[in-house]
Length: 215
Image (cartoon, rainbow, N blue to C red; front, top):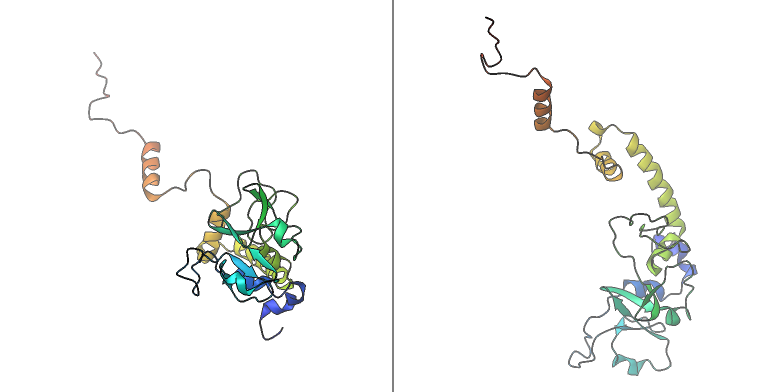
């Protein structure tokens, strides 16, 4: 493992500009051209790798490989026609937005896959079409690394251990188990137990109310 941490193990597979691109914040005001109405930063130079650029900044990047970042529901996307010139995007889910095919830069949080979904992102478990493995470029980087494979195996084993722990012994196990197995009816509470017990007991009648007096 290099000085840069776990990411270095798979560094050779990706161009040097990709990870900085995915970490960058776009659609912010350019610090150099704040007075211009064209100061929104939605460009990135793959040759300089010096942060998000606005349209005015591009004057200093002639003949460079510059890509444009776009937005969909507050998430950054890039057109397939642009990124596939410089990067293999195979196995990443594509979408059609404004009549153009795009891929997302990073994962989008999703509580759980939709009903009937049979294929999910190998990293974040977002629902995908059957022919894809990842929901974004960021998830592909993570999901194809050796570090992720090791972590995935460890997590799977840990989950099995959690499931074997009795409810009373492990609060973390309780939370994991409740999220995975939602009961069809709520568990009985102290109040509901008292009500059920009262209903199953011998009925209490008013004094003399059920007495039959013979002649």
